Image (cartoon, rainbow, N blue to C red; front, top):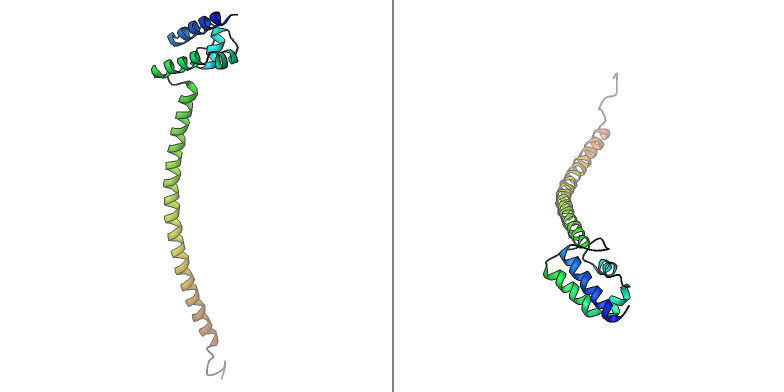
Length: 133
């Protein structure tokens, strides 16, 4: 295939893809679909006809097209941001509960120490008179 023929095939494939009428590919606006539709090797496009590849990408961007992979990444990012916000809210609640539990434990330790001291004093008390006297 000649360079002129390759360029013509690539240009035709660009038009078909941008119009939504792919001839051989799945119609995705990607280099892979473009080379399949143009019936050329990928390196022919990416190394031999970089101007056509760049033109293709520029026209895709100009159409405001968002590829399926980019849409998925954006959806994944939105999901991750939502989950992060939920985790941060949960973390805030858990920190507050942890502080409350720490105060409760501290109060219980003080009360326990006071009870031990009282019990110790009760064990040291001896009756003046023994039993039966």
